[in-house]
Image (tube, rainbow, N blue to C red; front, side, top):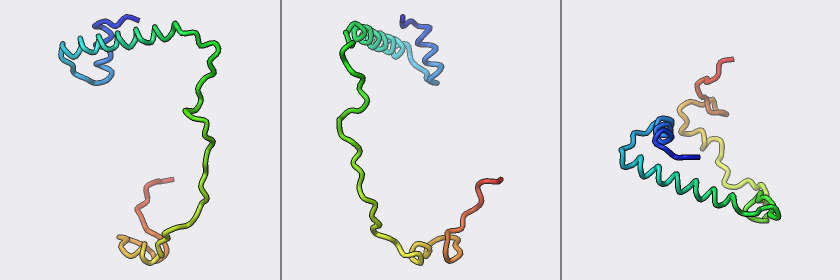
Length: 96
């Protein structure tokens, strides 16, 4: 893939950016360097390498669910702008 001014202009439009000519040249240089690096990586022989699925070998470590620091209902509803003694009352947001 060739990084030219047309590609930079298209990327600038898609990203909703307004770049100066200096920034365009810098971006073109950076993208060319990135693509060169990717092409160099393509030369590596990865036939004996297993795909990386996770960054480490740790299995999910779950903690026990424990109820802690519960707030009493009266305390939770005390500063509510609208409540019915049991629940918070909020405006309806979905019309079915």
